[in-house]
Amino acid sequence: MLTKKCTGLNGENRDYYLYPEAIPPYEASDYIQDVLFDAYRYHSGEGDMWPITWAQDDNLYCGAGDNKGCPMNLWRVSTLRFSPSALTNTGQWSMDMINPEPFPLSSLAGRGEISGVKPAGLLDIGGVLYLSVEAQNYGDNPFFGRQHNLFGWIVCSTDGGKTFDPTATAQDFFTGRLASCHFLQFGRGYSGARDGYVYAYFPCDLEDGQSYWENNDALLLGRVPKEKLLQRDAWEFYASDSPDTPVWSSHEEEAKPVFVYRKMTGANHVIYNPGIGRYLMGNYSFIDKELHPRPIHQMGYPESSISQLTLYEALEPWGPWKLFYRDDDWGTYGDYQPNFPTKWITENGRLLYMVSSGSWDDYNFVVQKMAIRLKGDADFPQESRLFRYRRG
Image (cartoon, helix red, strand yellow):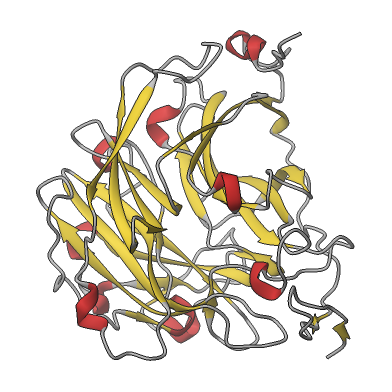
């Protein structure tokens, strides 16, 4: 494997594998024609990750990592008013941390291979919160130092996240390339779901069969009857070679990717937008100045903090995916993990709020309004007329 020369902040050797340029291998969407982002972004909370679900009690709940002296906690976002046409987001929503440690970290004491624990996915089904958790280390390959997801499990809460049952599943519920579980989001309390299943995406590397927080190769897709979500033997996995003929298998080794972007697949969130009848996915991973994939911890700021954002749409959870937006230098310091809270989408689906996080000043709950223009639309929705507002 060819490597590219790189020197760390302290003069140490930080050469990294030279993978092909990060060019998304997907055709452009013929449905979503254009995207317009608000000129301003709004920050709250602390930490990163931010898996989000719209709960039965009409609040948004989200998980955060690496803040408040703890690697993982749970937050509640209350929507005071939903006004995407307002000039700013100030006063539109508020958020509070409601559980500083939803899983007893002391139970992992002595596990030397673990450097941290992070929230991966969060889902509310009729008032019960299911939080998928992943144990990580911070890079065990000196030539491509990705955060390695070692194994994952699920904890659940019946009191709005104030307490969680840490024994809901075993800690090795998901392992290997399934170690990071990200639930597909529908409507309030899981209303509007396509059927009686819960769907989840699993980022993985196709070369070593492991899972990473950034710069994976692909996403796998699993599903389980929602009443059996905590039963591992009830899960099955997409195992088809064609999205036209979906096939499911109870054998995880038969799972086949539903999305492939070599060394550029993130730990992605996917939601359903009923107003436009499409599944939306935001993908991120990190690159160098020549567009070669490079994990964020491979070198210090600012060279390593360049991320690529790509947005995709599909008619089905398994694709085929089509690209409708690309930014090769996203955010302020290399942002990551884009997400679209399903509560914050207009009825016609044209206006959304994108939540993300990033390094340095963006290491929190970052919100940016976004408008889309579909095929046949004369323009972006009228409510987005202030998105280009700049003082002076």
